[in-house]
Length: 609
Image (cartoon, helix red, strand yellow):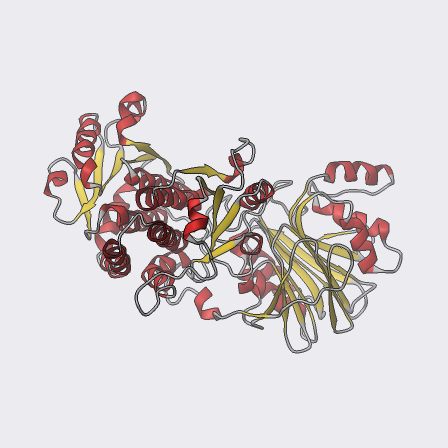
């Protein structure tokens, strides 16, 4: 997690850096800080526990001047949130400052060595090790000292370094954690993500692992891990800053919920030719390639993992290929059966999820073909995979994922349908029917959003509850799991999802008078079983809200309230069923007075394992 911004040019760095940090608070927001080299060849710095507003207040009262600087917004990994643990970290002479995203895994060993040599540590962080090690190796050459220090580190990290003895220089390095370089008019930027610099430039370099950036006297040089100069292709960011703004909504989360119809259209229509056939970008999988694949794994984390469960359902149903879905943080420790006949599909909104990257590297080493589904062009996942499917959802800023999840499900439907057609598992008529039905989902999502006021009322009734449950069967259980995750992560209500048929094997003991139970009932073949499960929890005093297809009169006979959603075929219902659950989570969180976009203890892009 964590957000890094750096600037070197002819403008005041402080304002640019703080503005950039405000665009990166989704990456972490328990503290923030800035360090700027001033004209007197000293480093002025400020840092503060809490949201960025605390740092802004300090800077308003005591402005920091200078045209070279680095800043940081933090998601704690080492040491509790505090002023002293905030970044940047400085050496004892305050001639060096470092900001850091990631984890230096061998920091304790390095710290012990440095302590024995007389270095004094003020914080509990691994980052302070970095600045002291650079100080140790410094002999007048900032780049050489940073390069030598980095050679000692193990782990995943991105670093930004400035020195008061080199006020015309900025050094940065990337290892597993995201970092980009922005190119302006006589100025350069570093950042963890594009929104931080989009106000100033759309021209960026996406750094690869082990690449090091050196700006000196207005000249940018990028080196690889062997210290060779790298000639990189300058990329242009196609979307603008408005796409990363709230667009008139009170919160990014609601704006992104409303973005979902367009995300569905963009993800689908960009890949349909004039005959309505799917073309999966540069994914060159032939019938023969697919017939050689005997097993598929889908690996992801959090919400993306739930999209993978929907993907399994679609691929197995349409393409008739066995699929296993695993949590990325568990996958590589389970000794998975992978060979050259295996396909690994990884899913990551940011494309920088550390556990997912580790899983795909393991699979590649064993000969598997890796297909990535991601929302970020040029991300690590995109660069490492053999094939990439971009979801085109646009920037997602709220920590709780909404439109990225919907776009990921659409991606899986398209991949499953393409694979099935190439293998001859579906005929052209069924293929065309499904394309038409997927395309129609966008309008149906819009109709759900148009009736959000009733959902808001249900949510207000839940605001004082201490726990809640979601139930579902089949793919509705997947929707229930995603819904429970969304509610717990932004409302802080303890929420669990259960396969409805498992209630009698233990979880029903948790039901008591007035317990909110939200039941997803969209699968026709499982409707009768779900109604029986609703009766079971009602008999124990639960208050049941059902999510069901329009026209379903049977569920209304047993539930206390029903949220009706448009009808689609069962395969596609997860896209529609999840929308009310997103709204419920949003409105409950608002009713409880929470910060919807920045829930406690969480961050958007999880770049630590």
